[in-house]
Image (cartoon, rainbow, N blue to C red):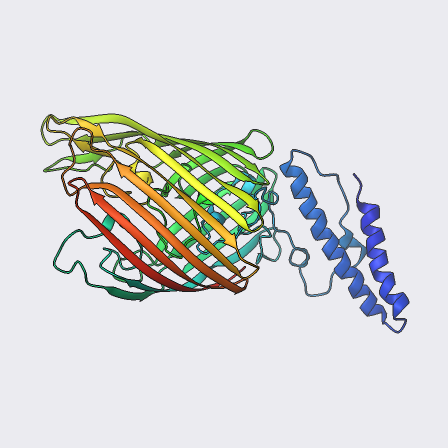
Length: 477
């Protein structure tokens, strides 16, 4: 399709109309009007080209409309023509998120996120086709808890203290550790969009503000390499909470890895990944060490539509240890996750996830890093531990400024052959209800009521209630 006549016609029309209405306009004013119209049309042409490329078509050759008028002196042509270098708009419907995990997720040809459909805030680097954006937000959290929760900054149900002399002591805390900075760069290439993403927050220390790496990766076309979300998790299914932790049964892991996304039809993809392994074993003693002989391998099938999405993810991993005597063993573990989102209409959104497997505790929010992938039995054999659970989240937009979220999740860990001690984790439950007010796109205030419950293998339990208020300013939104 040749769009050049349309471009010229619209440019001429936009230039003549002011002249006919206001005969006293100067030639310079008219030339500026034409130039602005040409720049806007050029931006629309580039977005259409990117969309055609994402659909497997070759954009028709055309002459830049910017050549019909000279660029203003002292400016750069690349800077005067916006170019987001996006593979195309997100198929998923737009949605809002406080912590915005979706924006950092890897997507087919670096498509826009549903929480950032317009890719706002990018600026051109003069003399190049590269666009950059400084992003993130500042967030202040005020937290009141009816009794100690183990972590004063996050609501981690698996860390609730059970019993103890100070068990009923309330606590109040204010922190800004969730404050986040990101740098993103994009540019078009003959092999697809080239994207670089770097993100940090201040959760690197439990007793201070230590800058922590969250994401650092590059993606060319559909090939990703670096540090970020595991391909097993689904960032678009995570519910919108003021609490940074979220439901304990949700798969969530930041890991180094490499993956490739295969397109299998419009809105359908298959992602194959190899990721850094880590064997988390419950009862290592003496000179026992955890060993990793193979990378974790994940495969994720995904379907995106205008009503939402579905994702089925699988992971296979080798979990092992080397004993201080003759013992030592490697076993194969793995699991599945089914997750997704459903947009009932513009005011109602559902998200959900279900996960189950053996040796996959590392991938779940609540018990990742706690050593519950496997346990060593009395005979030295390594036994994989089974974990399973699920969560759901419901978002209701009351109007343009007000919204609420209801979240519930449960995670279970089995102890089939009694290889876990009585004080080991058995089950956790997580619930959240919030009210959010966003009077401006970049400003959000909210209050959230949280309830959590922990059950140990010996039957002891603990429950905690927390009230959290948050103020957040997003740098670009």
